[in-house]
Image (cartoon, rainbow, N blue to C red; front, side, top):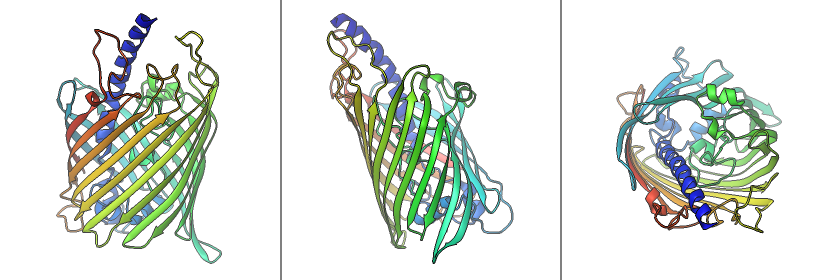
Length: 448
């Protein structure tokens, strides 16, 4: 039995380690926000008007209104080309493995106003897979139809429809994992976490109806279906990450938002429920995510900006089948839970210099069959980024290009329920500790 488990975990270690390397790279690159110059050209406003930093990350209340209005606001000075590009180069230094210098990502954004009531955001992403091989895929999509400045009783209201491919990406507050692309990595994770294995992000399609009442009350309701395997393949996604077949899926988001001009705060709840067949020919698991989030921004006169966000999501699972157990007399649980928490604080000086810290925790029910070798999937990680953005402000010499230079430290203090020998390999095998997954990177991103 011990020999079987050693071989099993050695194979599992290779798979998880390879997957985690990709996840870490995505997390490192995701810290550069999508402040597309196409929107700046369309509105005549600097990137720093919509984002706390001139290249992001978090949206200001002005940026939230722009997203709520379907990306349609304009300066009225003629038609602008609704397109932009971004190139990202990274010097990556992992704790274990070879350091690399690569053009890690090349992106095309089709983003902006189509009519007074229709606009959108489409990202086409090309990622470096190593050996100068790039994989091009359709990333986040958010197409909107909006009816603005309506009178509802004595109050003003906005209503719209979003067609998107990532639950939570359409949220106007933009602090949910799908919008920030920042979620706790680990061997498991919630449906709303894009870092989870077999995540829904970009592999589903859905529509949500949303509304803002009296400038403070925001709500969104919708549903999603997973894309057919053939479509995932055509869009550039490997079939190994298929999220499964979804049915009876419902998404809900409600939040109270308060813009005090120099300060902003919000409190919201989010829910996602579905039945998932993974593999698609298998029985259905019933999954329900329920979470809440809190945000605070001190904007002042935009010289010193402080932003704090906390997102807490709990997922309840009812499994439709039990995996085979290598332990005599021990079976997997029929019910389980996964818990994701992310706390992020960002300080930005003069919208050019900043530091961002995220503490991420992913925990789950104890289950020795599903989460070998220790029966605990718990993972704790931290992300620290310092950045400099010289352009993108009202007094910048250009509004048609932007640049961000950043240094990022990604650190694990626990992975797979342990700090040492996290894959539980036997004697003679390569032992991996949690801190062996740590990484440092230097990144330069240019958008134009």
